[in-house]
Length: 291
Image (cartoon, rainbow, N blue to C red; front, side, top):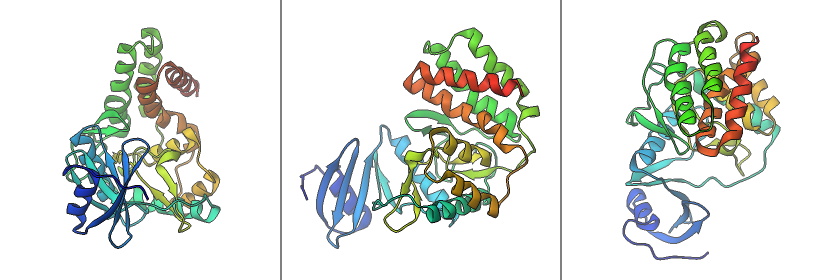
């Protein structure tokens, strides 16, 4: 393994301080990551966030999700400045049994609940992140109004300001927000969400289980996590959903509401990655309004 000498604030020294064990090797990985090996052979992942608040939010989110004792998440050893130190998850291949278990585990996670829609994890910042986009954790009592005000409309405004969406197009999404109370389905209590549950944040482990990483954890609607899995695809998604429904059946018509829950991540992607996602958000809103 290639080793590299880092300064006192680098991955090796920080991992040693947070775990209380000597480090035998450090290997730089693509992106802002490093693999750190302890003297006993244990492998850690050290991630460098863009800001201290981003690292703090991720650490708090992982701990909050882990407190539910349902889904599998890498152990958090701590956060120092912009560095987050967790266990490394050895990679395996997706499997149907692992997907079925992931569905059951997600249902258990969601059922542990949250104080309110938009509540931040304990110890986590109000001004958090989803990926590299800011995400404000402001609380609300009713999901449709909260979702419109704190998830859809801020990114819609940003997409317009960035020139990714024209004002007449934004008006379509505004109209959808006005109709959310009638389109959102039966009221549900706040769920404990991963919050950024696309396929890249599901690791299929060498142990035969699915592990979750990189959350944007908050209190939200449980259909949002499932809609995110649909948005970018997930191996054996049918088994994930089967496991979920066996543990906690979803409300009638939930598949017709997938687009509503995808609107938020689509607008986030429009702001981060461009016009194509804005067009997808617009077509999703139009389809929902035609229901």
